Image (cartoon, rainbow, N blue to C red):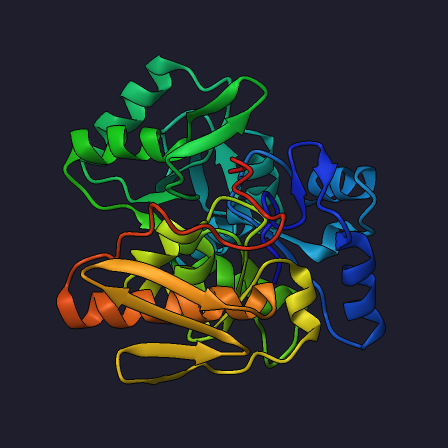
Length: 323
């Protein structure tokens, strides 16, 4: 299960080597799914973008938070139920495909659902907020607080969810990562009995894998960097760490710990007086494994995050600023 931004592509460019690695996975007989919290685009539109950056995909390979939200609503209210829609085309199509009736008039609606939509109007937000406060069930596609744009990070759908739920004094049902519905929807649609989540974000991709108790691989081609890993609490820690997607095809040896140090593949990591230090030589992947392990041991033991401000990871990978 691949996240998209920061894993498969950054902006309009595929990450180096991703196309060949995805094909290698398919050739091994494994299923491939592309999982996105973005509810504004249909699976066909997402697949079109993937093909446009050189990654082969069809609509059936893509699973969105809109589809997960539609499943939640269908199971709660049944086929044909009217659902008040506050969002874009991706959410509308998902509701229709699930056998629900998206409506703009609240009369007869049994629930409301929202997703990112650049053309959502403030008067509609006010009306939905009032209805939710009066008791209309609310399903949010996701709670992402930011969204990447050509002009930088902008407020995401999570800001809208906060507005509605804060005004109404309710906690919505959330379909997207890190909650269970999107992850479960992916396994249901794409198949497979031993899934692994591949992502670049700890608080959505990795936490989402923990939510359904499946392993995860964190790649360092997106937003997560050393300071993020150092501060990760157990529910945010990946099963595996790799600088790139090549980590899907490599062994992941476990570091040895003892005598206040962590060792693996020629690297030795320590946290002394709260500061991380890594010495030695070896592979870039093993450097990340010892560094993360040392930081987590320190955090669990002391309750404080290791200072990594003067620690420089090896290799060419650097934070890209992708969402």
